[in-house]
Image 1 (cartoon, rainbow, N blue to C red):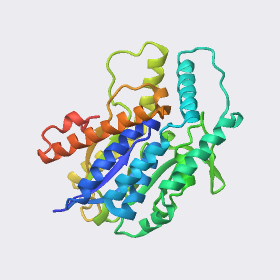
Image 2: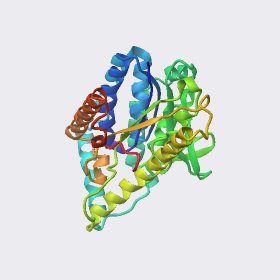
Image 3: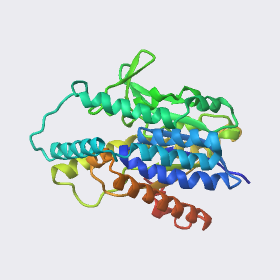
Length: 334
């Protein structure tokens, strides 16, 4: 019997090249199976990868999704002379700042390079995300798309869904406050969705019963666990940011688990709710915070390959009857 599957993609800058590797592996497998992709959600780099994949998928199926993801991350990679220099300057500067070396703290509104970075990202998104095609997502037969941001003025989470996902919404979801200017949408300013739902999950469940996901696959960028005690400045900063990125994710998943429990206890009507199995595909690698800004081709290629590897292992595990699900981070006790 076909299974409804939704995929939620956590944000994390360049680390979400891992997500691209995961999606370019999972989507063709789903397309070749009897199962049904009912939704994709994401925040920051996860949102960009999800939107690009779905845009390509709507244009040319699973092959279109793979081609679009490859082209997107090929353009994100810093392979031109100025881009290579700027990437190295940014990563090294952030590293020095975290090691408490005397580096200036400057508002992105005062740095000319900010406008260049924003313009470059907008051009990439315009090239690889067909927002007109995304308007078809209002059709109940197409997957649901959810992008997470935070509304600075209202002080609340705000998601953009389906035909309301625009390039501005994707830029807002990626607007790290220390690096990019806020993005104005509807008279309110928005920042990076890492401050909010990372990634949005509840919105994937708020749909008609026939479209509710029976499987939720979470692409997790930030490590869930940490060995030992972080003692130097860089390790403390890294772990603090990993925890900040996981808090909202774990809250969202706890909500899903609570609904599953209520449903099993008979406290919710089965004609309106369905059990949603949670599975994680995790990067699970201790990477520095500043490497989230690293767009060097070698780094992006390595993380993409890692995503492909983990997704293939995840699919093998599903084919083996879920006997080894715990090794991929799946646990109802997180």
